[in-house]
Amino acid sequence: MESKRLLSLDAFRGFTIAAMILVNNPGSWDSVYAPLLHAKWNGLTPTDLVFPFFLFIMGVSVTLSLSKKMQQRSTPGAFFRKIFFRALKIFALGIFLNLLPGFNFSELRIAGVLQRIAIVYMVCAILFLYTRWQVQMMVGGFILIFYWICMCFIPTPGYDIAMLEPGNNMSAWIDSLLLPGRMWQGSWDPEGIFSTMPAVVTGIAGMLAGRLIIQEIPAEKKVIWLFISGLAACTLGYIWSWNFPLNKNLWTSSYVLFTAGLASMILASGIFLVDMLKFTKPVRFGIIYGENAITVYVIAGLLALALFEPYLSGQSISSYFMNALTGIGLGDKFTSFCFALCCVGLNFIPAYLLYRKKILIRV
Image (cartoon, rainbow, N blue to C red; front, side, top):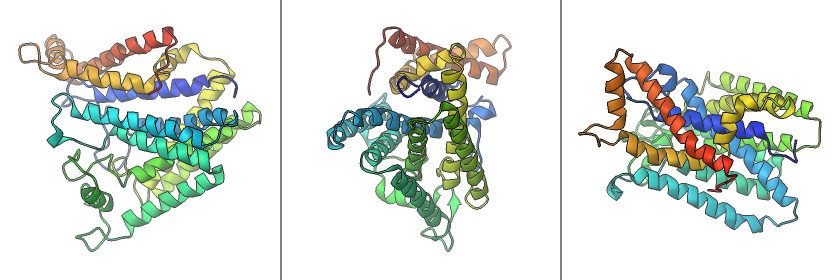
């Protein structure tokens, strides 16, 4: 299993990117099924699992790819420049998408999904190159505890107690001091600087799962240990949420453990079904999407401009779609969901072409 591409990981990554596109592109934000929306604050919906799953998968990929290169007796320093420039490219793509369509630099949002992916990738890759897995685990644990103490026990500036409300918490306060540019929610940003620290731990969790995968032990044991460790992390995260609620916007420590645990159990199930039992046909869609995941995500961002900007007599394609289908009696939310599915289908076309041509774009 170590010598070949881990198809279950490609499938997991692909379905995660497809889910990102699905939840980001409803026909109308006024008509969306509840599971396809983020939780308003505390708690989780299926949509809140998508981003941490991707960071976990990225952590696994860091271990799998770099471990193979390190076996070629290359020094860690030989990879540092490549890691830095790859992270820089991903970060720049995020800034580019944030500037579209008007390139209004006065309203530039520095934070974003791709920007967080870039930071987490760089930190995790450097940790892999220069530390052992035991140190990585200790770093992850320290960050989660440090973040918990800062958020729950240090009084929020301007208040007598620690606050965990939207815009009124330690993370929002630190971002207001350090994060340049516009913030997504005015006074706070879900991809801000301080909450990126625990997001790094999501990547570290994936690295640790990858470490288990590359071990010279029977595949059955890998699956069992991935599932058991995932269940343990999920349980610990749930218990921790009694004091530090599951919250995607704050990327709470409980949220890190709970979502990483779920991701580990899903990966274990995928390895068993796809890589061991060879059930590849049912997940071929995900495999195709997953081979050029970030490229497809960027294409989806560009395609969204054509779909949501008003062109047709002052109407966007999305609003035209909504009006046409609701006009024949289909429900608003169902029509909005159908449009999101069409977006997933449209973005599958470039993913499939790249897959057929065996083109792997290393963003």
